[in-house]
Image (cartoon, rainbow, N blue to C red; front, side, top):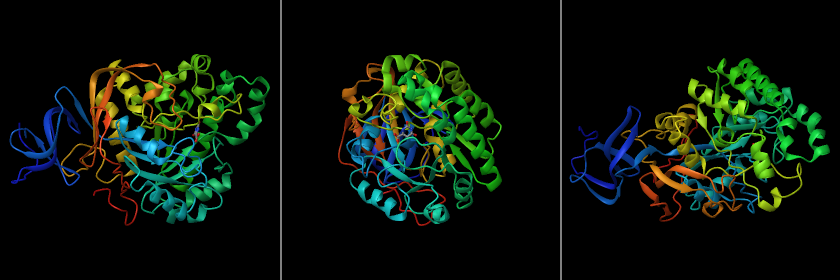
Length: 458
Ligand code: DOR
């Protein structure tokens, strides 16, 4: 086998040997050398290179680091649910090496100082690399073109329908204003606020969580998605529709792929109504809702057809006490960052998608659509972010394993085949043999479209 990368000194900080590497060209048996945070050689290196640290990856698959482009880590203001340390700890234990965090904290992330406060709080406490979304709203619309270029900003996120927190932009004039002020791909939670308000009486009367998908129905999602896609087209702006949950939206979005990228979540791909509500009650309550099987089938079909670009977890923790409030006072949201990869590996095991397609959705996809510098693939010169998995390991997901401060997962008791074993961030092993190692080393993720961004390398 040829060796990629010329280094006469043959010295690495980390060697990963004997594994199967998922490269942009497919999977191959290869060793991998990492130095100064980057991948410096690929090929048959064992016995020829010295290294400070080695991972024996025989029998394991080495994926480019998994990027979860939608998490809510609740800091500042709601740290009884989660904080940046616990959230990112869950991430790396689940094989995730980078996250984009959402702006519906308290205070909301609307201004430079809010973003800076998150960047400061993450320093020395984040286990994985990170970037933060700025919320788009009527109050900051005209400043967004500056705000979205700040180092550490993942872009602009808009809530068209209220979900959790006070961030809302449902008015067409405000939305057009937001779309006009910026160039980066804008992320949107598409549920139609007016229709949600009209229909809320359905669940206020019944108090039945099984009706969550009736209140926030398919039409609420489709209406909002069509509105924002039309406005984005008018403004010439690229759009990212988060957590698409319906067959009808997927059919519509398939015809708009030039401008629009699409996310699906593991919970929409794994659970179905009414069974999940009967079994889990408000623990399955999430916005947009988990819907009937025909929608789940359509999401899988969209993955097969290439309509879906990324899988994001929408990790949205609330405490069990908060979830126990009578529906619909119970807050919507469930944990997901730590279970994203195990749940998806189980789908790989069951033949729902290939490992290569999964890598496309969790590493290459986010890098491609958000313009990440140096991440998303295993190739020379790229950041040495590695998610090393055992495709045949059998585990059971339990609440005990969950690092989130909220302490629970909707998958408690679920048997999984395929599990993250080691997590490497820029050449640093942060999870070895499923156990945390060392100290938090997360850094700001760098984007191609921001100016003067801080480098993620040490
Ligand atoms: O169910 C949800 N909860 N959906 C979202 O998009 C937001 C989230 C939250 O922040 O709790």
